[in-house]
Length: 320
Ligand code: SAH
Image (tube, rainbow, N blue to C red):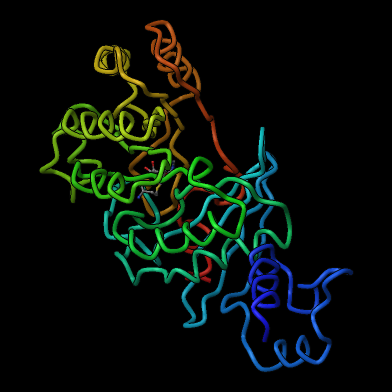
C-alpha cells in the first residue's frame, strides 16, 4: 500500500468511514485494495449495541467491547462545537460513594484504540470536535493510553488539546502528571467538598488528599496551560449543598482562574440512601457563587431521563 493511501485510510477511519469511502474523486483508493482491506481486517473492535436519546438532545451509546465488556460514550448537544463524553476504563477504581461506575471496581483500562473507536463510532452518527473525559473511569489511571489516543486525534483527527477536557479526582500528583504531558488540555477537577472529612466520605479512596492541595495543583496546571480550570461539584441534598458550603467555596475560589460546574446528582438505583439537591437549593447554591463573583453554571440534569449519570446504562445492561 502506498503511504498516501495509508494516510487517507487512517484519516477516513478516524472520521467514521470504512475503507471503501477512504479515497476521494481525485485520489480514489484502488477498488481491489478496499475490498481486501474490508474483508481481511477488523476495523472497529467494538459495536454500538444500544443508543438512547435524551430530551436534552444527548445521545448515549452502550458500546460492546471485543471481550464482552461494555462502556458508555455520549454525544452531547453542542452549544458551540459538537462534543462527546468518553469513558476511560471499564468500571472505575475510585469508587465515589454516589457514582454508578465504581460500584464494582475497575475491570480494565481501555486501550488507545478503544478511545479512538469511541470517537469513530460516535462520528458515524454526528460530527465531533470536542471531547470531555467524564465517562466511566478515572482518566489519570490510564493516562498513557489516553495520551497516545489524544496524540492521534491531535495529528489526524481534527480534535486538538484545546478541545479536550480531562476530568480527575486527583490527587495533586495526578494533576502534575497530566501537566507533564505538555499539552494544553483543559483540566476539570472533581472536588465536591472543601472539607477533607466530607470529601473522604464521598470519595473514600481519596481520604488522604487535602482539597486545598488539589486546588493549588489545579492552579499550577492552569498557570502552565494558560487555561482556566473547571471544578465539578455534584449537588447531593443535605450533604454538600448548604448555603454555608456555597459561601465557603466562594471564599476559597476568590482570585482563582476557575469555572464551577454544578450538577444535581443523578439518582442511581442502588444508592437509594442519597438524594439530589432540591431544585431551589441548587439554584440558591449557584446564586451564592454568582453573587460572590464566581463563574458558575448549574446543570439540573444531563440526559437524566436516559440513565445518563456515569455508568448507569452499562449497569442496566449488566443487570438485564
Ligand atoms: N473519574 C473522573 C471522571 C469521570 S466522572 C472524575 O471523577 O472526575 C465525571 C463526573 O461525573 C465527576 O465529577 C463525577 O463526580 C460525576 N458523577 C458521577 N456520578 C454522578 C451522578 N450520579 N450524578 C451526577 N454526577 C455524577
